[in-house]
Length: 230
Image (cartoon, rainbow, N blue to C red; front, side, top):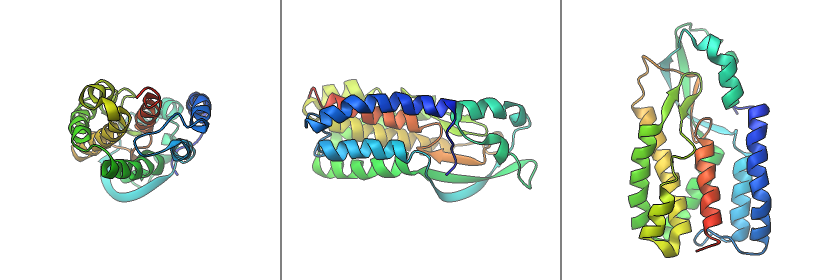
């Protein structure tokens, strides 16, 4: 577990929590679903994602450069991203990080399980076509933030909304969910693979976690709410 709860994190929890309240009512009335994922599993998924957003699963490690100016930027990075940058700077090696690459339980594992289920039971072609577009967009708009990791803008997956309504209006909720999740995560992985380790570095690089969880969660919320109208 890398992240911690500070004022910025509390604001995010408050915003997402307030959105979950009307979603809870709609799910109770069986008015929301994503493809073959019905109301109760959908609300449980949304709740679990918010509750487990700081759980990271390490998969590998690599060396990345420790920026000379990271010390003075650490306090503001901690405030914005809710990660202990100052603590992570204290390592045996002065010039490099032994960077741990992790996947976030809430931002990767939970939504990918749902994506796999939806791809088996729903439209595949449209989802994969839009996912490819979102992968490219995510890769282009993502940025490596020293001390934090890969940052994905919250709007990275929003293009899935109009494209799904055009290509598959009867299954828009499922297509938005699967394409945006696959596209955002694939874009993050592409950003990690092309990372210049001699210029940028962080103690941790999280896929689906710090820097990208909000982009994933927002698209899950959008695909849930769009099902009310489709």
